[in-house]
Length: 227
Image 1: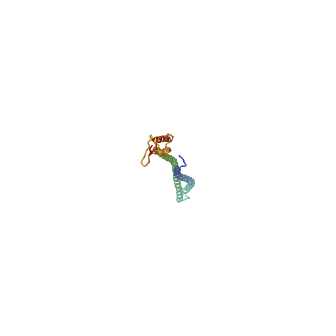
Image 2 (image 1 turned 90 degrees about the horizontal axis):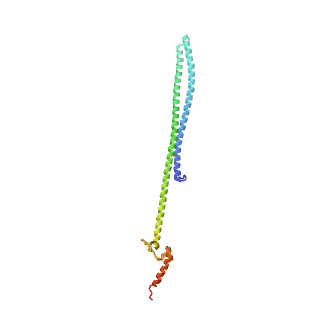
Image 3 (image 1 turned 120 degrees about the vertical axis):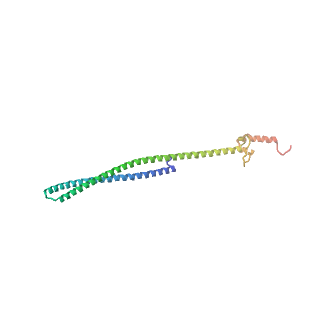
């Protein structure tokens, strides 16, 4: 197949645009999933740092609760002060639990985005393979169509040439008595063969036809005269 052929070039250009559109779509989705994974990683890192800070706060709050508990036992602090310290410690532990849940959710989202990215890459490869096969099939169909068209055109030309050759031979047969055993062929709308045409149409007549005509004329004598 000739790539310079306008039909082939147009088909290849259409297939190329479709293929590029699919590839661009996959590229955008892939870029979005990669960026989403980066955001989840950043979120996980931030939650990890927050967890460290909460652990430090819990450690300090626990020390404060222990200290106030000792003072309450000694009668140097009130129970309400101990209750406030214990409430702060409970809130910090609740924050740690919320932070742990957020971290687990972010990790799950990260894993899902990575799975989606792997699935997208597989689909991209499959789509490229299917698109390539479809393009090859289209090119094969176009090639077959061109071959069929060229064969039909060649047969048409050969038929026309054969018809013209047959017509030429028929015209020659009407003019030349050699082709019909000395008898001219007359068709509707055409004159019969005339002896005066022999010198122009029949090469064999040039050699002996004229001589026979002269002998026949001499033997008969002039027409219309008496001895």
